[in-house]
Image (spheres, helix red, strand yellow):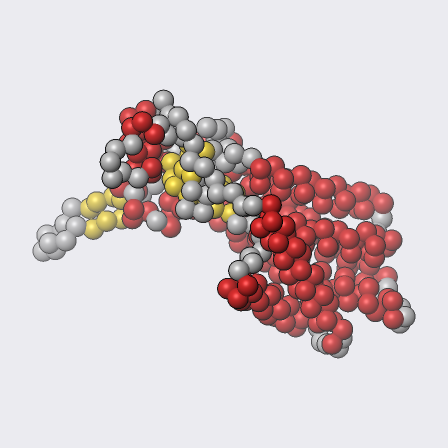
Length: 313
């Protein structure tokens, strides 16, 4: 059978510390920059603040890339996600919580705790790594070609193994590499990925609802402390809503892929894989054959959903 695994790239403790501190700094910069939006533009509507907030987030991303090129230090996407959750949870606990009913308070705190647990599980877990036997490595043949040959000889179900350039490993049922979660999404963690994505949507929606309740109760307060608190609450609401907008589309896309038993990477790069190419013979008067996209693994809606639920390596 298959032997050694492709090693995932590792970083030194100093690099991890620098990256973590840099990620924390970027989160604090972006969140406090977002807090300036309601402070500087108190008279504009909440809807009008959204494009300004999106621009601030885009500037933060460009700043991170510039500093990476200039000083060689890069942010960690999982750390960015982690620190954003902790920042918003901190705003909730210190500001919003006092205006929220105890039941909703317990629910939101449980959601945040579960998100952190889910992040740890998906970051540290095995997505479905497939090993290879280095003894069969021929001269001039790379590891992925060797793995593909071994998969074809051992089981046809392993034909859906794909190589991730980011992790430098091969994953069964490879969907995509998720920078935000710091891991590939494959057969072993695809369900956790969907649950975690839905969890983010639920938690961000709960946070937005709680923030609205707080702002409604504190609308008449004119003290400077209340104004600063309101700015932080509004800014984190803006951040949550912008996150929800793209996460909803992302979740719908993945549900669509599950329903048709197709992986994101297979859909994007289907021309690389013969099994997804349906060749039509040339019509009379046309010398060229036509290649169309086809899904060979489609078992119908219920069968595809069952395959997703029961997926394992």
